[in-house]
Amino acid sequence: MRILHTMLRVGDLDKSLRFYIEVLGMKLLRHKEYPSGRFTLAFVGYGKESENSVLELTHNWDITHYECGEGYGHIALGVEDIYATCKAIKQNGGLVTREPGPMKHGSTVIAFVEDPDGYKVELIEMGSSNNAK
Image (cartoon, rainbow, N blue to C red):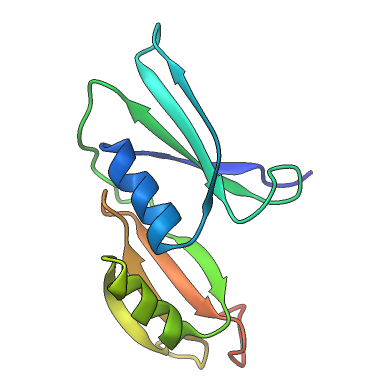
């Protein structure tokens, strides 16, 4: 078994696709509209779905906003140079909500960014001393 994807409901699919593709560097893997159900699915990720876990962005056509909820935590992405990554994210219009630095009570270097719907994305520097947190 393996994790195939994580689904996020998004209010503005175009904004979300711009964020995940242009700001975080993912690729659009597939996109399909379901007119009878009034929704669109877009799958984004860093590699083929057959080899990687991806994100499913679900846009219900009649809904423009979702509350993230108390149970949602974050998506985590491993990066080589967290400082350069955060700089690039800012230059591409992304919002860094926690600047890079060691995590509280540990030494792993992390940062947080936020997507257009308010979902948190944690960046973890892969060269940090303890990536398991």
